[in-house]
Image 1 (tube, rainbow, N blue to C red):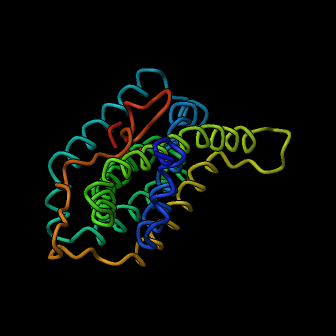
Image 2 (cartoon, rainbow, N blue to C red):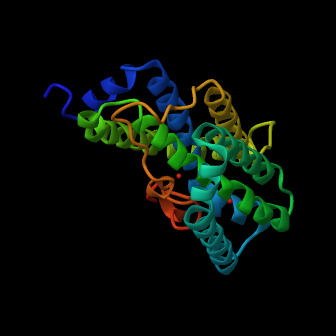
Length: 239
């Protein structure tokens, strides 16, 4: 009962070294996902997009997110396994963020959407690997801990990325780097990817262990969260 609260449930994540690694890299991914609160602001500032163009970009995001989450994720997990799917997905997410930050034209910015959308494949893989590392009676507590991580990231991320964006476009400062928030998100995802390469591949032949179906877990919110959540998706909720 002492752990029957959002903060207390996080204690479970320290019960296994591999579970703690997975929780850490997922937290980095959840924070990175919040960079999409500046999706529209960034496009308006850098490319002078209209509301119509923003809507078109979000529609493109939705198409790629649906195609990858609904049609490719399960096949990729079965083909590569959870561990490879996890770090490969994070690699695509980091690469897409880097491209978005470097993009000097709208075309390149939009081209980053399908690359970032491939990030979606990592979330079901991570959640599947985490469920294998706790007992059946702890599955509910694990889901609560995961939701707590998302909630903390949701509080930290918007302030972090919007603050960085505002600072680096402020004419009072000597550095003018509008892509800085995307660079930070890319760095966080590259770090998560490196952590993922050190996670052991789960064993499926141990009694009582069952992996969630690849398609059951969805990245938290599509490319975007916040004002443009529907635009871009990480699970239940990846340009």
